[in-house]
Each structure stands twice: as structure tokens, then as C-alpha cells.
Length: 75
Image (cartoon, rainbow, N blue to C red):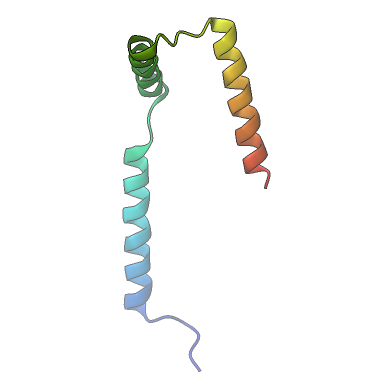
């Protein structure tokens, strides 16, 4: 029984992983891009329903988000 995959299977898997990695890299945002999107979202919410958290409220929300992400990552 041969446990090694044929070369063409291995090559296909490698190409698929490289393509997935390249696609993922294109979806990642730089810190500047994330900040720009966050600013646009806040402006849109403010315009739509008056949502305008203070800096202290934003800090509280950031800490809560960090806590929840850490909780999920720990599972």
C-alpha cells in the first residue's frame, strides 16, 4: 500500500493553498485602511441615527470587543 500521494495531487494541493493565501492577503486591510473604514462607518451612523460615542465610550467599546475576541480565541 502506497501512502505517498502522487506528485500531481501534491502539486495541486500546493497550488490551491498558494491561491488561498494570496486571496486572503488581498482581503487584509492595513491599519490606515481600517481606520478610514471605521471613520466612514461612524460618520454614516451619526448621519443616520445620531450615533456619536464619546472617546471614553469608544474606549469602553474597544475594550469590550477585545475581551470578547480574547474569549473566543481561548476556546
